[in-house]
Length: 113
Image 1 (tube, one colour):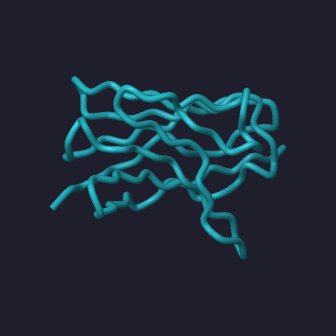
Image 2: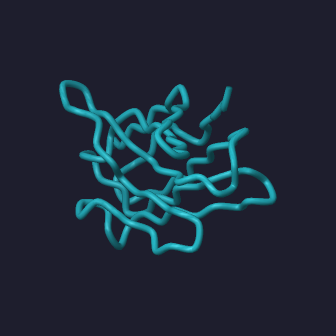
């Protein structure tokens, strides 16, 4: 069973930064993604990265968020800059391999003054 553990969430003021981390036990050849879900809203894809490919981002975070991975550490990161109140959500790490998807437990990000 693949396990994913997120960390790095918290409370930050608008304009601030956070870096989320996701340590996983899956293959380094997996697709890795970060999703978020705000109260009352559907879960949405924030960013995704595949081995050897160009990262993809939601339009709402382009230019502010950066996804990266360190295969030596089995870790994927989400650097979030210029945070806005509308970025407030629970952020989930996803690992996709073939037809299977695995999820972390989520980490809360709150952007508020």
